[in-house]
Image 1: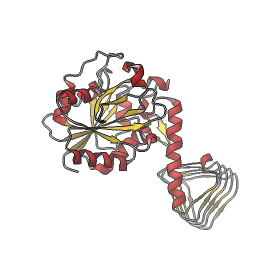
Image 2: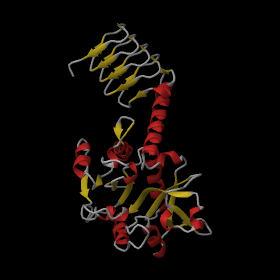
Image 3: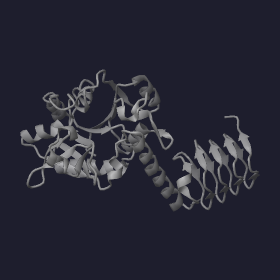
Image 4: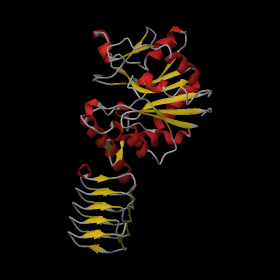
Length: 339
C-alpha cells in the first residue's frame, strides 16, 4: 500500500429495521458484535489510523470498541452517510492520502477483498473507487448507473430510482476508496434534495464525473460479503455465513464435525486434529481443545483448556475448566473453574 491510508467506519445508525433499542452495530453475529468483524477485516491493511463515526448510543458503541486503537467522531444528528463522513473532516484536517470508507454493519467482508480493492485503486490512479456487486434481487440497495462504455456515472438510491433504474442488478456495496482532498471538497457540494432528505455519500460519484474524473469500479465476486445487516433476518443470514466459514476452516484442518449446522464454535476456539464434534455443541471463549478428543452431543464449553484424548460426555457444561489429557468426563457433568 502506498501510504498513508485511513479507515473510516460508519457506525452511527439506529438500525430502525432491527426493531431494537440496541445500537445496530452492537448486535451480535456469531459470538461478536457485527462491527468487530469489520475492524478485523481492516486490521491487515495496516492503516495509519481508523476513524469510527458514532451517534446512536455512542457511549455503548465506544465502550464496546475500547480494546481497539481508534479515533471516535461523533455524529450528533443523523443526516445520512455523506453527513457522517463529513463529520471526520476536522479529524482528518491537513492529512493527505486515501480514505477507505466502510459501513460497520457489513460483517461478512473479507480482508482479502479489501486488500484487492486497495490494490486496484492504487493501480488505476483514480481519485475514487466504488465497490459493487451483482444481485439477483437488488431491493433496498443503491443501483450502479453506467454509460454506454460501462463507466460508472452515478449511484442512485432505490427510493430515488426510476422504474428502469430499479431493474439494474449491479448495486453499490457501500465501500469506497477516495482521495481525502477530493472527498471533503465533494461532500461540501452534496445536498439533501432527495426522497430521504439526507446527504448521500453516493453523490460524490456524480460530482467526480462532472469534474471529468474517472470513477473506478471494483466488483466483489461474492455478493454475500457485502450483505448489509439491517434486519433480524439478515442478522441470521450473516451468522449462518460466518458459521459456515468457520466450519470449513476447522474441517480442512482435520476436525470432524457431525451435523455442523447444529453447533456453534467461535473463532477464538482452537481444536486439535482428529477431534470429533457431535451435534448440538456450543464452544466459545478462549477455549483450547487438544487432539483426538470426542465432544459428545449437546455439550457447552466456554473458556476451557482440554488436553489430548479427552472425551466429554453428552449434556455436559464446562466453564473455565481444565481437563487433563485422556480424561473421560461423564454425561451430565457440570465443571466450573475459578475463572
